Length: 190
Image 1 (tube, rainbow, N blue to C red):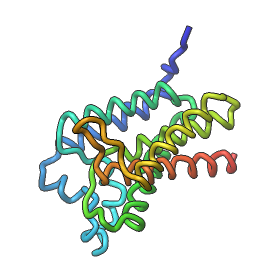
Image 2: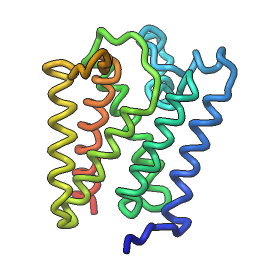
Image 3: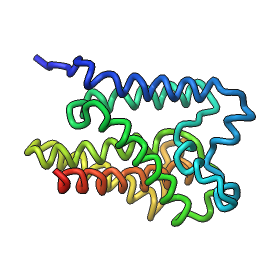
Image 4: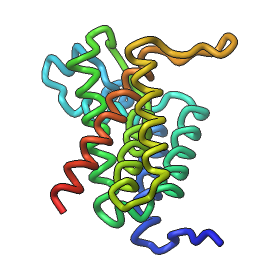
């Protein structure tokens, strides 16, 4: 039988991040526009956007999809980052994803959403799984890295009329790359 990590040390952080996304979503649009990742304002010194852009959503559907992603990552990897480690990993992934887009994807002028962090959490958790001897970690890590690398370097896969835009592709790539790097640093540090 599957045992969920329902202890507060595992559940509190994803609850708080989910609530943070909801609270940010409910801010007035004028405030949201001050938090999105936008290249020109960042270049002019509004560096907080390198963190806050991952927490901004402009539609309920996008918000709920990302909150669901938080809980899928919780089900997969909750025990890898109890207590304060989870919000730290989330913030580092937000920075890594947005810094990657800022420095290596100059065509992206604006971005919002949490998917860069989610892909980062997926890669991060898979690397921690590998280190713990969980063989499925290799499959998960290779799968996510192949997917984001293919989309970033070759182009997104089109299914019917649906396709992933370049904004998400870059966020996913740099988030996943950041997740792998953060996990390796974390494991080395221990």
